[in-house]
Amino acid sequence: MEEKRNTMWAYIITGALILVSLIYWSVDVYYTYLIVYIWFGFTYGMMLQYGRFCFASASRDLFAAGVPRMAVGILIALIFFSLVQATLDTARMSTFHAAPFGIHMLISGSVFGVGMVFAGGCASGSLYKVGEGNMTSLLAVIFGLCLGQAIFVDVGGIFNNLMPQSWHEKALQTKAAILNASGVDIPINSWFDNYLVGYVWNQPQFTIAKIISGGRPEPIHYFIGNSFINSILPAIIIMAIIYYFYPRKVFIKKRKKALKKEGKEPTTGFGDEIAGVWNMITASKRTSLMGILVGLTAGLHILAMKGMQNKFGVTNFGHLLKRMGFNADVSLKGTVFDPGYWYITSQEGQVGAWILEKFGWNMHDNMFFGYVNGLPELWRNPALWMSLGIIFGAMVMARLSNEYKFKLPSLELVVWAFTGGLLMGFGSRPSLGCNIGGFFIRAAGGDPNGWVYGTGMVIGAFAGVAVLNWWTNRKMAQEMADF
Image (cartoon, rainbow, N blue to C red; front, side, top):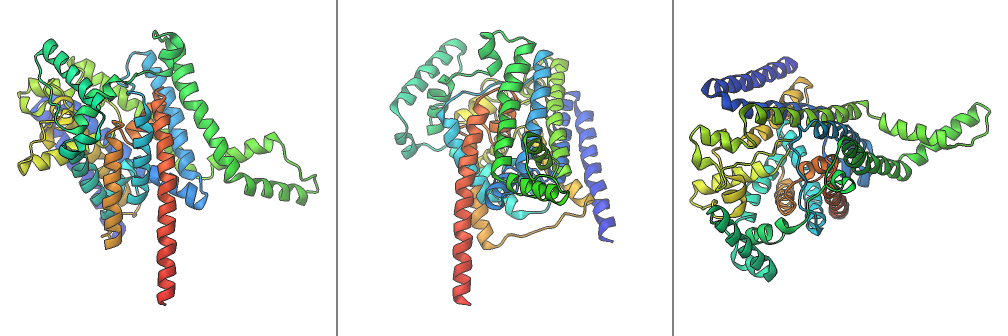
């Protein structure tokens, strides 16, 4: 009976999204652009739920339990995505762009890493867990990724006194230059405005392909530089390190025992080590398979969005919104947040800003919403539909596999979710990305920034796991003492 009910819900959810897509298409063909985001989000959600893909789980499983399954799956996804991305770069069909390089990536990655462990899920993991009925993750999304981010980029006052004066001076110089060149008076009010314009915009942006080609990359540079040097080689090295410190000891011990049982000399060599690494990769075929599919899908998503841009002759969905007459939705430069690939957190921040504006808080007086990303109505926000697609896709897969369960959090989990969500929000904005946009997409696209942010995430996750272990042991000791 429960299985039939879940199947029925899966059909209802899918049917509702199909209906929504048809309504958008019937209203205006330009909404096809938005529909593409819906269904790629839906696909991500199904794959994330099926493969249990979560960067927080990968860190927690590895550091707390010594289980490398999820970490290996993520690295496999990275490898395949990098190959597709190099192919798209070669065909001039990529929407990827490198981010400003700097120490801010390491710092913000560390903050995000702590937050995702506390919240029990990274940005993408929290979304798919909402689709499974996990209300703890929903709290992390609403209060951290939505409201927390929006407030974070708009506050000034005492926070403005904590930043270097050089940021403010440079921001004012850039403000004057933009006003002189385009007539647009950009808002420099919050600490984040000064940070973004006075510091981040002045940092170098590059990929390995551009470095090794002298700024004029050819196909060979995309595959050798961006894919092999920046993605595949580091992923292989990390997998080898994980193998050495975690499953190797048990695998080699079993290998020697098997040889001894066969009457052979219990010695192992390089071939056995390769077999051990392969055994680690294939230990969970489900996760490894989803790693491959996630990587390929992320690449196809970029191809589809570039195709949409070419079809309509635009580079941003904001241009289409203006054609449809929704000028209030776009930023001062006529754009909205439209990454062109898999991305999370900025659209959640827009939700928070949209809510706060309904209560009278002006969220257009900062750079993040006012000049860079715009603040469209929720139903016209393309990237938000991608996030909703992840939730609904995960919900359908959870229903089909009978894994959906509505779970209300305890008071303790509410505190962890609130704290972790805020830290994830705070850790995603200075780096202009999260575990997906800050690490996964960039590392696969040839941007070294991805590994800087990823290193920060690992450091933060390690610290987060240590704190959680301390708290758990302390709580158990107290319960035993009370008993």
